[in-house]
Image 1 (cartoon, rainbow, N blue to C red):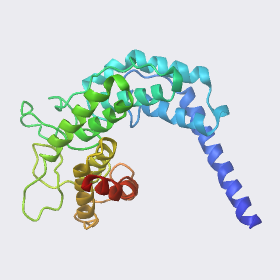
Image 2 (cartoon, rainbow, N blue to C red; image 1 turned 135 degrees about the horizontal axis):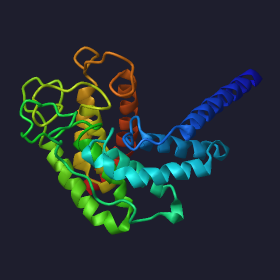
Image 3 (tube, helix red, strand yellow; image 1 turned 90 degrees about the horizontal axis):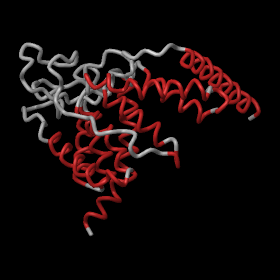
Image 4 (cartoon, rainbow, N blue to C red; image 1 turned 60 degrees about the vertical axis):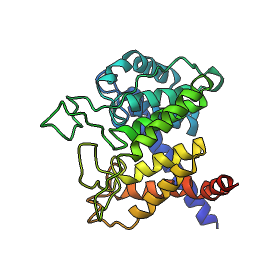
Length: 285
């Protein structure tokens, strides 16, 4: 037993050292107004620093963190040219709101404004139909599309002044999302990559059925709507029948590899099953 304890302490020490190294690198990195995104920009860096501070307050320099937050707020408008979660205003706005809520009693209800939208911009690098850029295209991936926007506004339910408006928007957006389901025979996926596509989507975090199911599950749980939870479970079980070939799984990456698939399935299980039977019981009463 002593060896096991020592091993655990060694692992924790190594993890703390790694987090400390990463924190120092991020804190000393220069500010870049053109790189504010969630995936590889300042908003992602701020979230890491926020979590590192929760892990060990001695790791984060408060002045350096505050300077980065201030710079982020001053240049947030530059992300409005893209609307996706990975690099655009959805992810950046969500990050700012997360940091805002982390302030507890110092929360500022007017910090974030409603600047989200639906349609993929004509010149977006994430457009799938580039031959006809004037055709309205709505991306269906979590990373660059509508599910990411839904996920980004979900925390607004915790803001009393926005609760009613947020509930209405979430219901309307999820109903719209369900209407985008493919109706092709022998379909491998429930949803395509965008509203301009009819081909099946891959298994991944960034695109596909798994994170659409997760989006529906989280909204259904928050708003107590069993039909969203039922659909999330249905999609999840269907997706579990796919394999690495028809799921187009080529690597182990977190964005579109096997790591993301395992993670999303795990999160879906936690979201669906602890609450699923309870909600069904409530709906039948």
